[in-house]
Image 1 (tube, rainbow, N blue to C red):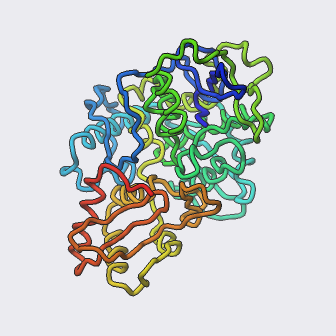
Image 2 (cartoon, helix red, strand yellow):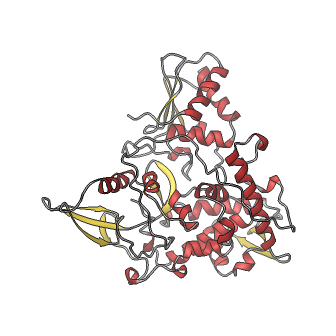
Image 3 (tube, rainbow, N blue to C red):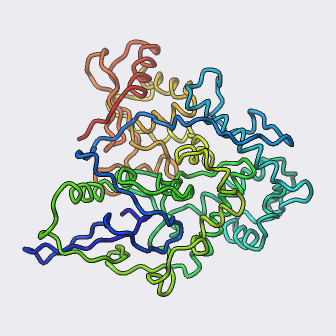
Length: 457
């Protein structure tokens, strides 16, 4: 379900008594949600085909570098930028060089906003990191959160020169973004990007917790740290106050995208009897979902967007104007660090063993890849560049089967001239019997970099 919009258009067929739910694209509704934008959702009718193949190409904005002048107080070094973006920077394609320039300008402006004295001190228990961090951060003023960040774990000695703060954010993000806590959910069973859970209201303090999450996002960006867990494209677009498009919906809810596309491409006069409401499927029951009493009668304002409000308390929106939603994801989360040991420990082998040369060469290639290439390889095989917060053991397939579906290496008896083949529904890669490490490297890299779609079974 596409929860970022939460706009439901109910229609009833003249010849049936069943009711189907399809989000509206024809009227500008008023919606109250934990993170949203006052911009009208935009739907394009230019495309007549629904894309049903997953794409592995890494398309990123080619926007020009930011024109924002750099503060003379501090010009950031390459070490100030997210890990993985500056490897062999002189060889980067233009879109990556542009992003590096934007990041340097952003770091300079944020440094200029940091108070020159005082500290943002946090002392928390590892066992109660979520609740204790929530209580401490929600008592702070925005200007205090911009002071130098100093984190201490209760009962542990050590000075924070950045490492303790990184560990704190690492542990905290795993807790506050964990779908089991009800604030967020995975956008799809086979896709590990996060979106706001429409049933978060089961916690009466959920809006305050979303405000807290926004502040933590802001703290991470302001102090040049990254958070684990990636969000959906609409999430980043709404942080940037950009309108949601039909193409954005396809990546989150393909079924909904097909329904909307059908409505746009067909005449529904005399076919559908439509009414508007804001509803969602809550624990198997369709019901009206209001994030505050009488929420359907309240206009969306800056005051009732707590997550976005928490984020902008630390990061002025004007500083993010040069970035698009993909670039903002890199600002917040960096390039995901993949645990190769966890990957190997939770990989299933089919028609091969750990001693099979192709298997050994595969892991050597993975270790030789940059973080970005590892993420692209993972996306090529599983359909997502992200790993569940619980690690590779929690990988899910998209076949509807219950339980995890581990990453699988399948050695197949085909011509060595063939490229490796990915089956994203099964998290499986078929590898031909290559006769050398270099041949496997060349073929695998070609498949990851040049493929236009994934095999479907």
